[in-house]
Length: 432
RNA sequence: GCGGCCGUAGCUCAGCCUGGUUAGAGCACCCGGUUGUGGUCCGGGAUGUCGCCGGUUCAAAUCCGGUCGGUCGCCCCA
Image (cartoon, rainbow, N blue to C red; front, side, top):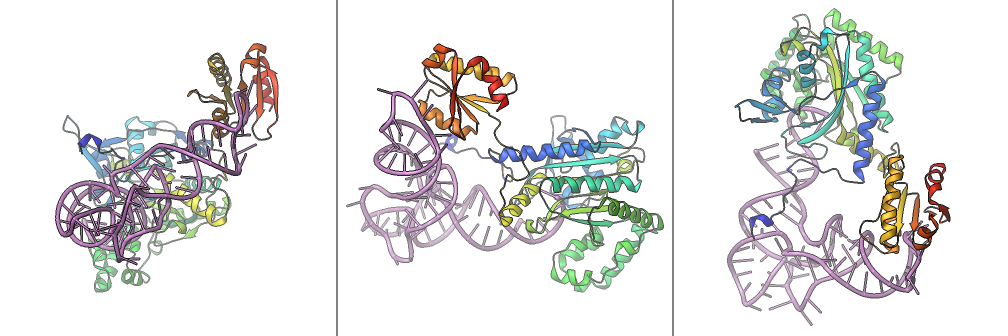
């Protein structure tokens, strides 16, 4: 077989989002953006690829994401560029670059963008995936932590999901806080080195706190008695965390304290949280976030505290499907997504086809969804297409109607139909 | 990077174990019954390199080897 006959396929780990599912997909993204904007988070768009150094410095050179998951390439000028593996670093970079931190604070932004990580794909994990998220920069007052978490929680619930919110504080880098705790933890891990799974022994030097994430039975047993960060926070971080919890309680946001929760990216400080749902299997995180008070400085900017989250659209949709099927409810629940065509024109003959195109265009321009046959199908076929389009009405145009300046308007749910003047069509459809 | 499972019509799959006439079903699609009326019903129709390459055999969708692809799990994360 010749090579040009081999079908081209979507790259491994990527997905096409096709109708009808694409309606729900768009609807969910819009719901997110609306929720975020109602809380004062303005939209921001940053480049899909960035200087590789941004992620190495921001996300952390030892992190899993940077060491083995990035799509890095060189451009014609020899620059090393990387498809963004996450959203926060780019947003913070843009804020610093354009000196938004010299304007009114806090800076509150939302994004909805594609992210890229080169991992082995599986259910709920793809090489190109879509995240919606918000970032709030310029204050470390605990009310903003509570606001960010509440906005994420209520969006997920508005979408129809029932996530569990895991909450923790991982302190900041100081001897009397996380730095000191890390030494204590490393000491503990060394004492139990022979009881840990081999992969986890390697983590002692690179990222000891990640040992809490281990799924190895042996390690889990050991970690059950490990010292936890919340017992080793400095006074300021302890107080900050207490206030965040207090504000969340005020707002009625239900959370589960998880002192073993650590996050995969190096820039996190203090508040850390994750929205999980057990039905997602091993990819149980719908999203997560946390505070990143040192990130701006790592990227060469002035100190700028910040907090944000990112939620995976694919995983939310996956969770919604599972939840609804297990509850026996309809998939569409919570969504208005679907075809937007209200009137489908059925035209018999060339002259009628031209008139149908003119009328459909006129309706569209006045804000009413309209469609028509373009394949010269017979009347029966066109009626079938009308039903398939999801339209409420079929507007039939034949010789009789043309001669009289009328259309036959058929209600496709009731089957009732009436002849009305073409000039009355728009008003008639609008009043239902 | 490692392991399991699976590749037959657009989709979901049967057939493969026990090789043998034109490779099937349901759904979807198209046409007709209804010369201008969809969603029901009835009748008809189109659609397959049986993933690919090679081997065994008189004969391979079926047996053997390889290869490619997909998917699920591990690690890690959204």
